[in-house]
Image (cartoon, rainbow, N blue to C red; front, side, top):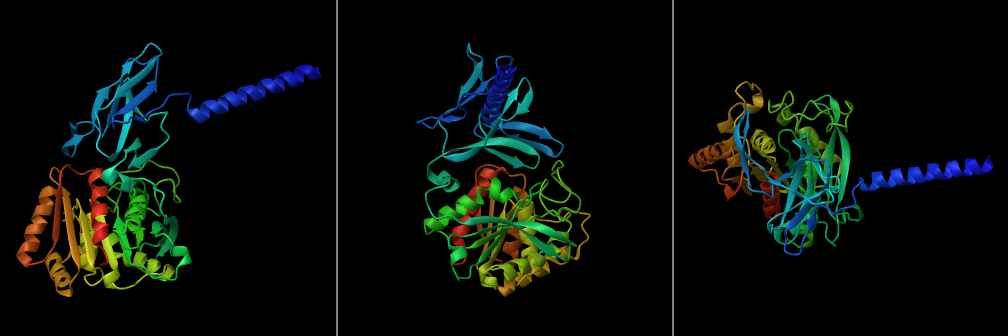
Length: 397
């Protein structure tokens, strides 16, 4: 009986160990993606029972995608081929240095790569990522340099009646220094939250690398949640786990802008910062660019640096907040108060291109100075990482 007991216990441990290893390796002992020496990338998937496998991602030529909001350029797709062992594979053309995202489509079902544990969430979509190094893409990598810290803090927002979560980057040496630092308030787009810039935007890596290269001054970067009905990102707040939405209630209705000073007061009360106009910047992408535009003119003597990345500009037709009263007058006041930099950037195929052209025309008529950058591509994170990398070195000179 004792021998049988020992045998059964041994078998249990063996099965548990095998199961643990399968969980650890995802049941697939293959490499995917594999970045080859010539900058081609090979994707692999063990799926012997599948009839078709495609890879889709932003490293492929774009395809037109029809949506309720119109037709947009979306990621293309390429077919994988299956070998006699049931392993599907595809090798891309040589890719330029960049951070890329991708996923698989197996018999019509979209899923992530089980061999790649590195993922990002954009609204409710999960995709894998990889980096082809070199050039600008090295800014997105973790290199052997001094590193800053990323913390998630909770601040009290009396205006919104809740405690809210904010992501804050502090530069290398902040904890051991007595210096005071300038602050960049960096705002996300619709469907994002306080996790977006740090995850999809690679903010910490970009800041570490620019500071180490002497291209940017050490600064604090504050990344709030712009969805005023949330206390935190989905899964991180009191409502628990729920599906993220692109446009939640009260989006872009003026509430966020009207209560933005709650964030500034928290930062300036809890961090060693230079609490003056010359050492504050506000910038954001899409909806965050919209917020940056309206926050900076609604508080027209608060920021010396403003960055609009693929920004939405004009408020919704049903928006009645006082924040959107007298846009021309508050812009004029902002101009009269003076600022160091008003930076506008957008892609040539961005659906907000015309809105930004109209804003520039308005500013030209007012004599309001700005810097303008136009890039290839559309409303995509690849552009927004570039804009952040180009904007930050211009700050606090």
